[in-house]
Length: 390
Image 1 (cartoon, helix red, strand yellow):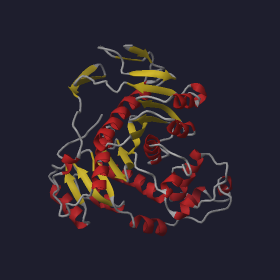
Image 2: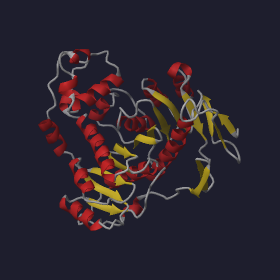
Image 3: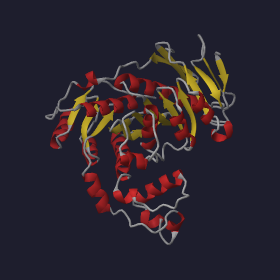
Image 4: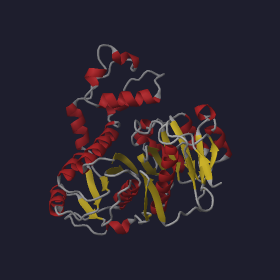
């Protein structure tokens, strides 16, 4: 098939809409549901991301996409008991590909609400069962077991979008797009991201252990498919905070850092012990945890409002407790899709436990950035590669 009619374009008023290919056939098959314009943008970008993650790490990979940027991306590193709890999979037997998606979904659960899922490997029943209970718009994978397909076809009253990607598909070297009737053409961004990009280390501390190098690679590949400007914090085989589409790089660093902080704070003993009512839905639980962690707790959950979520009113997580918890965080990897123009980005990254950085280099203020890294004993690599994506 060379052409497929879509529900509509970016918005319902943008009709007609279609996707087509001029040579050969479309590289994906619709197994269930009817795709929209943004669905396919998410699907094709996320597919490239998970394929590159798997090629770079040798591990099954997954991504959770929203509005053409990843909310999370991860590889199949086993989950600790605490992560099993905050990802709502305690006592659940997970396959490697299911583990990767659970991690990707758990990076920023609020942003992943209504996501498009991407898997590097065949979707199995374990992954499908996890997806069945989450709010998600669709999935792309190279294949599905019969049981997984049967499970996923039950989602969204039978309308869940299921795409099967042709693993052998290779696009043309040149890509095109139109904006306001004007055509653009460029070479596809085929740069290979691997550990060779981490060789140039201008900081005093040049030690980047294997796990940190893996996390830097995950961050950089994630950024390759994130709307720019973008910054990604990663740890333990997954993205934990992604800042996308900001005009200022420091705003990217702050946004992504705040998300990384929330990921760490969700593991605080007070959060793990929150006395939720047994029938609270997962999205409501995620929203409530986010409020509990934030400075809005006293304003939102007061005057009895807490009773719709908890069996008893929990003690607040104080600013002092949050600060003390985050002060113990270390070993976080940080990638940037372009150079850091000022040391203020490093100052903010340090507050979120960043110990390793990979950025393009080449700023007129590289000396200031290096000096700030040295101040905190951060090991930094200059990749020499810019990863803008639009």
